[in-house]
Length: 81
Image 1 (tube, rainbow, N blue to C red):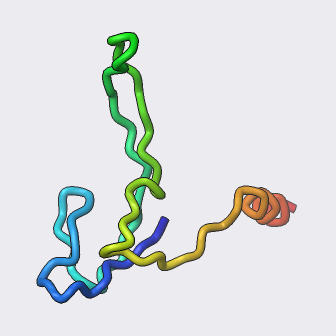
Image 2: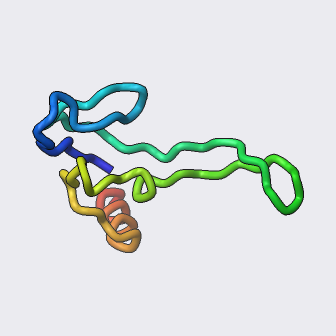
Image 3: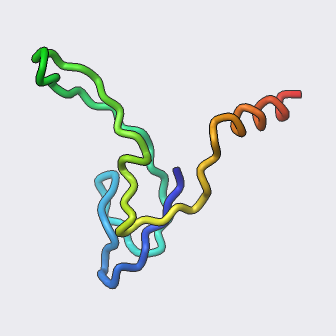
């Protein structure tokens, strides 16, 4: 998901991807995979932190509107013909 850092009145709007982001900077949110301990079983399992879960209304705004999965498939099918 492509996002843009909002102007928060501070030098840096926020922090993402091991970098401080300045207002107006455009960057991509990518899914993050991590190992977490399952509290019930005590075993390690892989979790995925989605773009939506990483998105912050406080200092980010979407640059491109999210495309529903059905439309993505249609666009791919048309492009392949």
